[in-house]
Image (cartoon, rainbow, N blue to C red):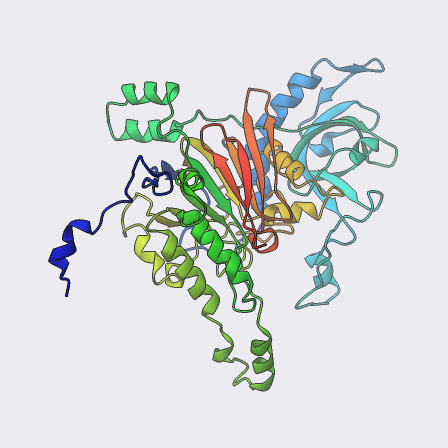
Length: 505
């Protein structure tokens, strides 16, 4: 019989490293700490009301973005002479006069035959509980009616230029042209506000150090010259889609868990995986798909008073909670909700409630604390500073909605347009459900991010865009893991991007 005292010296030891046998050489890996500061740009007050009108959002957006558009337009068009006539600026769209070359700033509104119109339904007394939504509102450029509006009124836009410029409802632009005999503004040029000012790397860290009255001069110099904890990786995944309907998919999820924990592959790969300092889950973590036996049971069981409590399936959320509980002791997680997750449907989605994670919530922040927890459930969209870089991320609903307005399938191009429009959700509240803000429009980008990602996209893609003042933004479309079995890794020093596919055969 062997007691614990006899083997005490052999317990809780790291893997041994020997020089005479390469097979047994397996040094213990350590994961670097994550430098992470979330912003609360899209948090809503607990006492929120939906009684107010939505029109104020458009006026707030126009007021905030108009100065930047006017500056860009003035720099490009001041002194412009066409056919002997100098272009002049007019303050309101109703000040446009026929035959006069002018330019004006306003909010774009696009009327499309396939786009749902609640006012039309109300006027016809036709209430539809669940309308069939088309994949795209765009059908033919000739059928679209593009207008520019402000607080004075609205004017229709025309011209061949509209065929080459993608405009959606809610974006703020400046247009130059002249009114034609049909009463439309025939445009010859369009200007966007372009990328917002971009903060320096580590700007939030420097600010927090200053507020804490720390001696930050040495720290600032260190940040400018050497980035601490070099070689870190940021992992981004979306569309985990935990459900009880597909047992075969559980294998890929288990492999993903083993990969992130470093329990798979060899020592060299584990050394690289150990550099992943944070995982961001970008929406649609829980699937609404039902197993065949569940659908059969729902048909057989009669509902009492129109509600059947047994129809609720807790298994997907339990599986997701178990997945997070396995990860969190080793890897911090930031969780964004998606369209399928148990969160409010309107933008901005608020964090998934902690009650959904009875095990994982032990890693969340302490009540009353300002520091984020190891497990940080955040809003969608979400903004924060990760390893000094300003990061903006969404669950993908904003991209999916803009996709319906345009003929193109270029998701990265849509993300670039949002950055240049300085608005991450221009179609809210027209066709993207949104909270009716009265005092501020948080979807306006006050600062240009260094990294902008969108989850639950059809395929992986990335590119870098640049602004007129030296801004540089890395754009990433993160594919659904359930569809592609892919996750994205971002090098936090270079912002270089790679993808990893979890394959079973």
